[in-house]
Length: 308
Picture 1 (cartoon, rainbow, N blue to C red):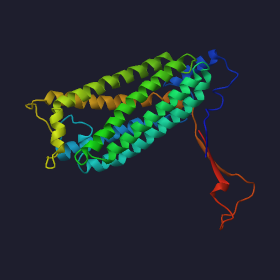
Picture 2 (spheres, rainbow, N blue to C red):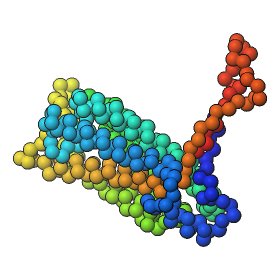
Picture 3 (spheres, rainbow, N blue to C red):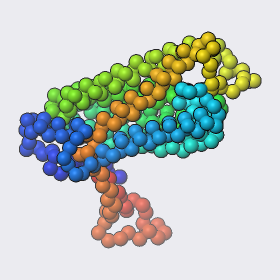
């Protein structure tokens, strides 16, 4: 299978100069445009709305069915049936869609780095590192969707760490790439600033979430408790009279804000994805059909070309 990347006809051309690119970048990189076509811009938005719908749906089900706390962790809203079933189904779609967005972004940047002659080799390497961290984050989302907190807590926590740590590193690398691409006019300063702010907020929320939940669960005592073969189920509801109630609230709020900023960062690809299109074409290598009977033919006589 051949994978070839391209943009909508008429936007880029080797004959245009940097002034024209900068003038067009304002249309490409912001959220308003007069163009009637949206390319693949719908994908980041679908990812954001589907993820938010998943979180809100499972929160409402868990709140009314199992009386969880008014502001639980995301994992607590999907720990018991039926909300765990709904969360697993929808969040698997979110994980697959997030990887699709990350992979298309990788292909787009592999094309766009040609406009940065001085940093081209560096950006090609950084782009590969970026897609690797993005894939780790998407895989972590799949793990979180299929392994509930009460059943296999260590696997669940590992998946959550992959989502957020991989996501934070992905956002920072994408911000660095945006900084480099700004010099050749493909990224507006406002969009670069927005991505840096979102990446910074994600890092702050991650630190506050880990710190608060560590104190709320008494750190080492929590790990010792869950290693016991007779330990009880994970606690989902906390009272204001509890010793670490404030720590729980800070940690839970930080986790929700961290997830929202990650989705917000992915949504910033909207402007650039408007000028990306995907087309699938299947054809034969030979002019005449290859008989697929016995040993006279094989799948090697066919090939597929994916135009992105």
